[in-house]
Every structure is written in structure tokens, then in C-alpha cells.
Length: 87
Image (cartoon, helix red, strand yellow):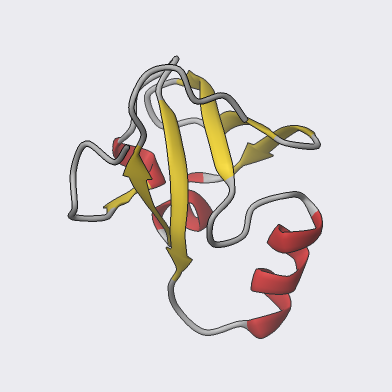
């Protein structure tokens, strides 16, 4: 169950939160393909592990853990998931 219908950038999530990838914005098909190989693609569940001020985000995907710079994380639009869903 989706809690909020408006997608938000991954940078606006909180540690411990589980989100579903809505889409990746901006140019760069290569970036979208690379993210997809890391498990970050539309429909994928992510759990935010670490989100420090100004630093990279550490997220858990269905395939492992990935560190993302803020510029890239800002381009990943997500929808918060209801509790109980896990990546």
C-alpha cells in the first residue's frame, strides 16, 4: 500500500524508511542502466540505511547495499511504502 501519491526525491527520505522507486529523472540512459544493474529501477523496493547531512546515502536494495551521491539520489523519485514491505 502506498502512503503518499506524490513522488519525492530519494534525498528527502529518512533512515529506516522503505520506498518504491517511481522513476529516474534527467538525461543519461547509461546512468539509468547502471542503476538498474544495482537493483535501482522503477518498481524496486529500497530501504534507507544512512542519510547524513551533505554526504552520500546508503540504501539497501533487493541485491545488496549501494552508496549514492546526493546529486544522483536527487534524480531518483520514490514513493513511501506502508510498513511491512522489505527490499
